[in-house]
Length: 191
Image (cartoon, rainbow, N blue to C red; front, side, top):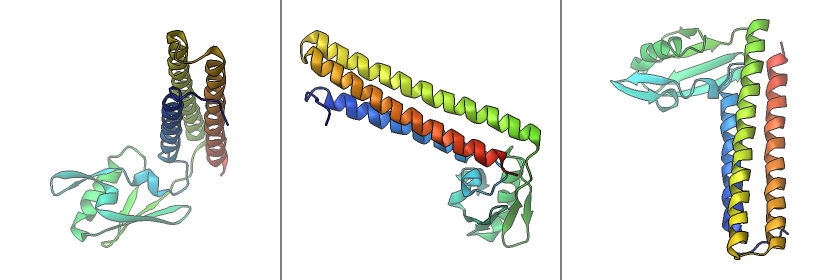
């Protein structure tokens, strides 16, 4: 167990919470990217004009991915089919909805090599932004620990141990981002 003074525990806990949120944000970005594989996360946030109220798609329909190439959207109110179809078309995702009068089906198009290269560049940028965010959190936590040391609230040895702990947590979260990046790159490269 890490030697912590009562004053450093909140700093360490807050830093880890922020790093987890940064990791979650990167993972969420990855999920929302169209990789040729059907994913509910790809469309659930699309805003639908439902009775003059912009509502997330998941709030007006059930969404499923029965196989890796199809997304099925079944509205709770059939009169919303047209609005759902229109929202998908204008979403900028490059998806083509097919309305059969009861459900909207989306067949995932194959990725071109050019699109794969764009996606790879984008996910690498997202991962780097996540790493930068985590390093910034590390910097802030270390500064807070050093401030306690300068104030005489904690000793130098406790400060060093806590800074090492912050670095270990930083390394853990950067590794998790790298793993998520590798997984997403593999997904993009699959034909």
